[in-house]
Length: 54
Image (cartoon, rainbow, N blue to C red; front, side, top):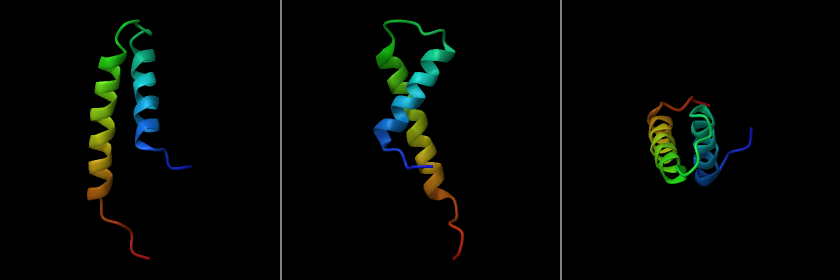
């Protein structure tokens, strides 16, 4: 799978959140904020995982 940029990951997650909530209009900023926080936390967790030895 191709590596997504930070913005692409946030956009994809925000869209998923929006769909899960019934596609409510007028809440784009809130979905973006939630998605950004979630993706940033995922990145922190990914970086803290031990890397497999080669």
